Image (tube, rainbow, N blue to C red; front, side, top):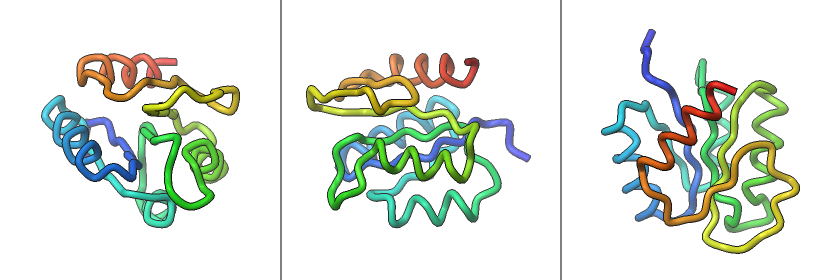
Length: 118
């Protein structure tokens, strides 16, 4: 079993998703990334373990990051969540930290570790 923290990362911005996933991997995380909830939810059900969900709030279709986090936590109630957004949005639905994009990888990894310790 891997000792690396597993991150489920969902963001529809391909460039941001790729760059962030590579940076997280370089920082020692095992990252599984998807562009939307339709691909992320089946992975959540098939994979043994994820430590945290990193999710964009504004995504295509009607399933935003808040809805995806609710669906994910119905399947895995203890799953930690960090939301990312480039917009000023109400965050009352958040069950975890909300970070503003772009976010420095050092900030993101520090927040991931903080969430995982809580």
